[in-house]
Length: 423
Image 1 (tube, one colour):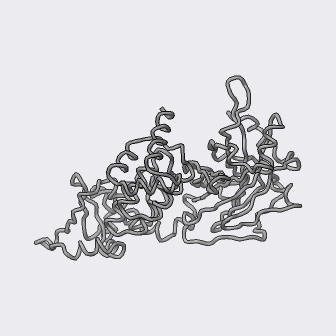
Image 2 (cartoon, rainbow, N blue to C red; image 1 turned 120 degrees about the horizontal axis):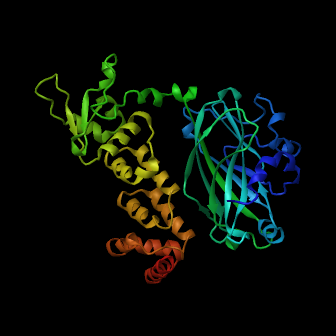
Image 3 (tube, helix red, strand yellow; image 1 turned 60 degrees about the vertical axis):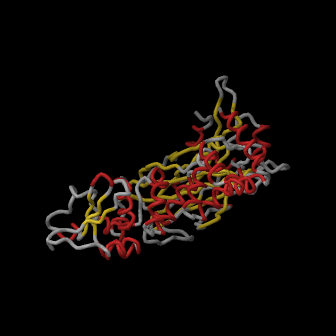
């Protein structure tokens, strides 16, 4: 377990001794406390429920907002070398979306080895919930998505962790809640040579479940029209929710849907519907064959068409990306690209670069090439690289030039060496 993690509960009394607090907003600045208010950052008893000066973001859905908080940890390298048990805590920062105001901070802790000695890398980056308002929302839960990154001074890019998510309970509390933590590699390349400063970022998204704005949003109301399959039809008192068309997935699974909604969201589906032959009997519901899609993927595509959302996007993003391109759903394509970028690592980058090239996804391609550039020399040799080298040599060459500015042969050699080392 991380050492000194118990000190989180004592931050109120030790906040005056914190020396590592230099956070600022890159995006969506929301009332960060300064100077005289620093001591209040970890003292919930001193706060009121009234909105102080600051920015409140008003959006149709809280899931549309992603925050990015940047924390410059002063003299990180120096203090790690000189202090026996260094403790690093950021200033408190606030997120305020649609009336839900939350206060957070970041902290750095360390793992210990079998002999009890402190491990310098990876460190443990922690996301902590300090307080939330209004306090009468006790029992309400929220899904928190978060991701850490640390700036590489050599490349000027952030080395990021995979996207993580967790469920937290909202409401009044005087205790600091550790929402989640991730291992983050911090080495010499991440520190300023003279001062040892480190720049850490954390992306945070807070999506309440059951909040009034979510309950009465357009996506929530449209979601009531969704049926998981033909066997899960709408109640008898809502005959209009049963739809006027059925979509057939692989395996013959049928999904009720509505022609006007499908056509409005996808020009490809609109064209397919207009070309359909109507059944001989008007009482019969026409069936549109989409057997190239699995039942699971078709269900998520319908969820996106009706609500603009996808459940468990990280696990289905690759397959839905192809469907988004084929059925001309650019919004779904963008969601999938973003998810694939957020969860990209050294093992998956080659496969995702091939995917981006196949479906002409420039955002995903640029992100994959940037990832290769930031992780040159640490790419394991896997099947995706071999396929790219044989089937898409031009793309392989582009990856070589973007990643290390060298020839394909030398990059292939480095891949082989990295693969051998990883095994």
